[in-house]
Length: 130
Image (cartoon, rainbow, N blue to C red):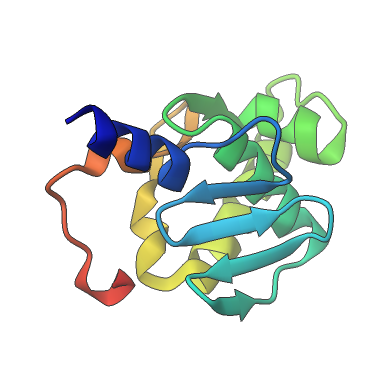
C-alpha cells in the first residue's frame, strides 16, 4: 500500500521542485506555459495558463475569486461584480479547452473554485482520460 501512495504522490501531486504541475492527465510546464492533456498539447492563453497554474498549485483547496484576481491579474476585486465575473468567464474558457477533464474544476458557489486533487479520486474512473 505504501508503494501505491508513493506512486499517487509522484503522479498526481505537485512537486515543489519541479516546473511541471500535474493533476491526473492535466499538466502544465510553468517555465514554458505549455499545457497538456495526457500527451496532447492544448493551446492556452497566458491568462488561462496562469489560472491553471494557480489551481494546480492549490489543488485540493478552494481558491477564491479574489485570490485568482490578485494572482492572475494582480488586482484586488474589492467585491466588484464585474471583476469577479471576469474570473468566471476565463474559468469557463479554460474548462472548454480541458474537455472532460474540466470536471476536476469544482465551482464553490459564492466563493471560488477548487481543482479536485487527483489522489482524492481513488476509485473514480474517467474513461475518456485513459
